[in-house]
Length: 85
Image: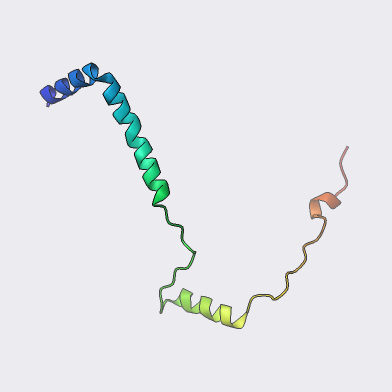
């Protein structure tokens, strides 16, 4: 084991530019691969027959989404408080 590490050190010292280029190339390649192969989930995950899945299905059926949006108040609670000196 010591001989292998010694030879690796000698090789790395004699071929510095190649070793530096290799060490710089590997993280870049990993980063590019991770970004290009990344898949985003649509957020749907369902295991049929589970109680939570059944409850979610029932809730969606019983409480359909609102057709109109509820307006938010124009001022929040914090802006209505008087300022302290």
